[in-house]
Picture (cartoon, rainbow, N blue to C red):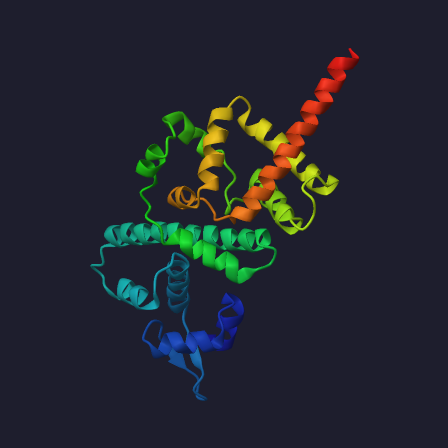
Length: 257
């Protein structure tokens, strides 16, 4: 027979937990010392291993108690049921992970304004999920839907999405400056580079996307993260200045040649 303290040492299960298992009838000790300390047999240890194994698969202690005490327990049905539960939990946790990433990135984009980020994400989560019909009604084609999948995602952890969030956050923090300033123009330049990398030759799609983005109603219907009109207007002015600068430089080079 093995003393409860030795069992706890061997299994890394606390004495308190072993006592609790005994109290609820999950694992009773086979014997006790004269001083009242619990003693466990080899069979008890095997049962403890089974308990920990099933616990590791997500079963509740009450379920484990029924499983181990019922000789006619349908293990196949029980395991299949538990597998469905675990898969549903994975989906739930994945959804929670996405929400956390969106909130972290939203707060970064809003310059640390956590309340504003939370308010905007709640606004998005409360919207109707029937995006496909609205997508079509907004003038986007089947090909556009494929391009849509390449857009940066607020909850994304890929380098491209994270860079877009950082660039937008920088634009928002620099709005007190002239959009023609080198700082702002460097950000606009990088945005244009990224658009070329991801959507080269897809100007029609980008135009429709920008029109949708500038319409608060359409932007909301399509599930786009809310960006204030003044931010979008500022970005547009910066873009126009950038394009004029590029065209001017090209014209100058053409004249020299």
